[in-house]
Image 1 (tube, helix red, strand yellow):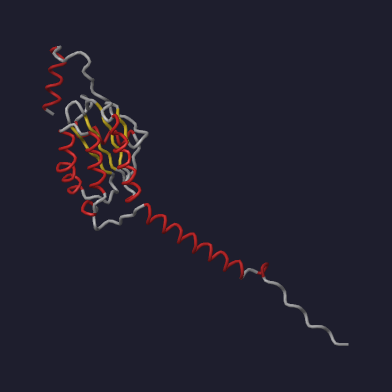
Image 2 (cartoon, rainbow, N blue to C red):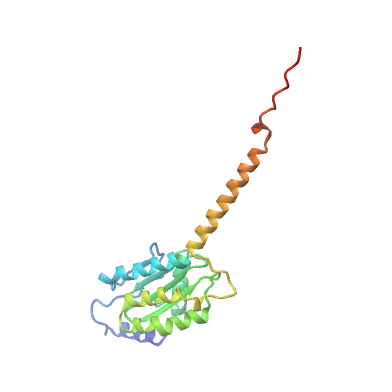
Length: 202
């Protein structure tokens, strides 16, 4: 909050240098990684690969957005939530929002997520935050994606489904339904051939 106040004072006093980026409104995301601050550059591929591997291995969909600054009209803690709402993110998705000018970040996890909030918060503070402070934007994404693959952040009381497990369940279910259909067809009257009548003896 103090960073926001300091930024506002500098704006009023006209002390900000020319070209300083203005605060960004919460946005509707249409890609896993949105870089409105233009900070990833050649490192974007590593961040994208980490996010893709996360969803492939665990089914967890991670969205990341980089903006120059969070919207000054909203509380910092609400920016990620508002962006998640604008983007219509699912209940099991995760969002990391980073304001690069202030090296600040916010995160949001859906209500139905199997992730433990305390474990996610520890992951953010221990692995993600140091990368953000150092300006290693791609490294922050990779650290978060890698950390979310750990079983330490999954609530043991909640079921956890990876895409691979889902595929197996779907295949098994289709097989069972197909077998049931074939068995039922064999027992249907139209599929049963009438028995040949015995030949009459003269």
